[in-house]
Image 1: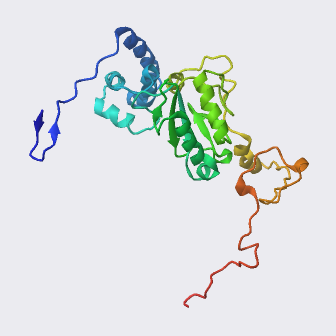
Image 2: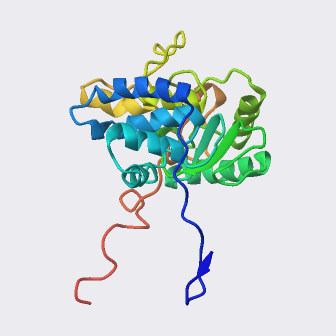
Length: 280
């Protein structure tokens, strides 16, 4: 080891990544040929190939990056640049179930921040860390693209809508116990390695899994139905604190911002418009 004039220690350069065992490499090469054949330019197959190698070890290892580079005729630097750009590729060992809690604006104010903090305490892990049994990796996610079901938790990219602190705790406890867990919508859960193989473009061969696909919920499709001319059923939404009689309350979970609020257009004591004339 040498030291620069600035006092920075320079270690030995990293050795090349080892190759896969021969049987694993042969199997991955057969899968890789199938993936590459789908694209007119082999370089375009890099993203699914990264999912393929992630399905082997649960994260993208240096060996996996080397494999992708060799079968596509790229440099390892080119592969690493892509693998480190997208958060869906894990760079260190992770759990069988990736539990992502949305902490973006709407989910956060609806309870996402509280859920994430509670799960960190409940599981004894921080953001991006894995439980000691290797079952659950916890992470915050900026947006799960399901704001109409906030707060939302995802497990291996499947939706768990309208979560609470208690329901999220039960969810991770069931995952760790090996219990059957069904998402709110979408296909049945499988392990993260199995999910990675599906994302590489290979069929989900579990019985009933394909029929269980399709993750657009009712709330997400309301705008589309209205655009097609379908009429929405009439609904009375009571202001916060007012509360409707129990027999009038809808079973549908309403967002807190569905209640009508006083605005400058509806509240005479707070009229709209500038407080002063222009130029004053």
